[in-house]
Length: 296
Picture 1: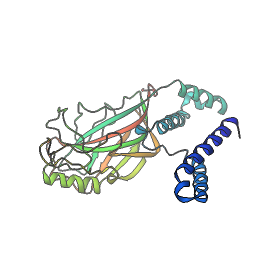
Picture 2 (picture 1 turned 180 degrees about the vertical axis):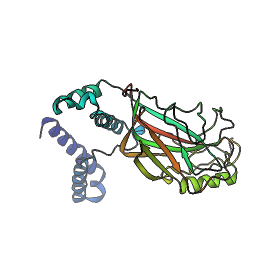
Picture 3 (picture 1 turned 90 degrees about the vertical axis):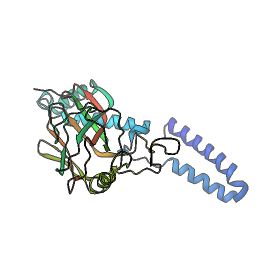
Picture 4 (picture 1 turned 60 degrees about the vertical axis):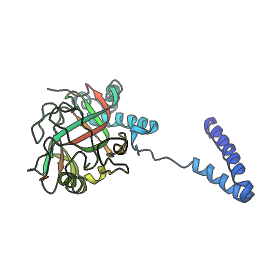
């Protein structure tokens, strides 16, 4: 053991001993107190999973792991670029890591939206400014990926919303068919056809990255729901924006602005009762690398 590990071991033993003897000894005796002490020490030294990043928006340790992992993902994504692949393996690795370490990285998100339609079963999102979505409208509340940038996605969410127009900015995102936003028939279709039986698919240049992931992962009907006009007797929906509706993207994938990514939602039947201006919202969260790709 090095000095740091020895110090950690000693402090762990002392703390667990004081805790177990102070709480357990008076009521359960010396044998139980020693057993609890040993269990606390062992538990504190159980290995942590190294590649499980979790919901990094609510955990600093996980966010740091996501950041470090994102750098590796950017390295893998660019290692075969002609700028590095023509060099010797050692030199190519070194130069690619120099490029990664020089990137301007930050936690960020890409927000894409598409309008619900009563006649289609496949919703395609436009990832960049020059890509059209399946209903041909780019909304002012979207935040599309710039073609020069890349995003290492470690979690993503899917939501629904009921704006009053295509330029409305006062609507809320929902993780289920809220009956205050949607008519009963539309809300039922959202809960059943969309969230319970729909799926997300991601392709890039005809290569299927994610063939099928159920939208039920994103379905969240909160314990506290608005049931009447907003007021003292009818509070707003319970929701935590950093977690609800989000799922992890493991393994992580890198969205590169200069490549042809197609995010899609597939549903088994059209949303026949889709309301005017209603939308599906897709949000990718992760580490953004600005000016990380060349646009020809």
